Length: 295
Image (cartoon, rainbow, N blue to C red; front, side):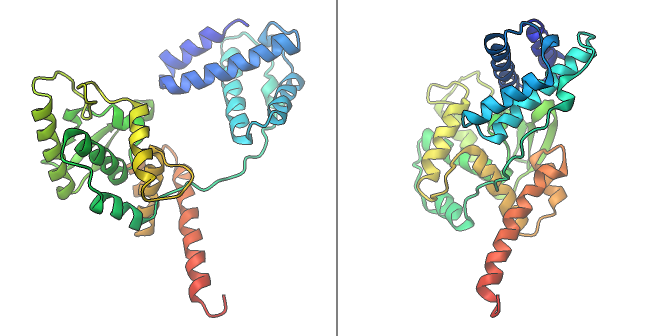
């Protein structure tokens, strides 16, 4: 079907979406296009009705895809049709009559404070570059709440151990400054010295490197985090994003202002941050039931 490439170029060059997001849009829209052509014998987007889109949604739900994933695909289609309308390639938007299925809200998983303390204070990571780097990655994610992509793209110049901040380039190229403690800054300095001693003369600017002195990559970060979280927690998801959830939950449990957490996480809207209040409320309910004599 026509105009898919034009839409993806619009996302990349005008909206400046990250590659991972564009890849998701591309997958969703090609899946819908294949359905229209193979199941409905429709070759153009302006031939598609809201009933056709509903049929696709039903097919997705019947195949066992979660409502959350279906809603993401619907969001991709909405963006596509808005683009087609803006370009004058459609007269009516069939998405106006499409109702998204309700998603079951799931609370973000997080690691308990005691488990994080055991991992970072008692576990021996080793004194070689790999061990020190792995511990630094875990600390960086937990102490700053940054995203995996943000950590991967960190350069040495983005860290000021004297002024106690880290500069992060987040979604939509939005820059933010995250404060760090003097103690953590000292450990970063030690890491930087070891990095320099291990890879003398390297031209790589990234803060974290592989053993071959190349910039670290997302899959390696996931493996590192997953490996070490398995040692201290049994929660289902053990990913870099779990440490982001853990950062926010622990901050909120310790009395941090939710607006401050929003800024530290780089959320565009407060609603994205408020999900962590549910974790705190669940903890309060548990304490109440354990402590109150008539609970």
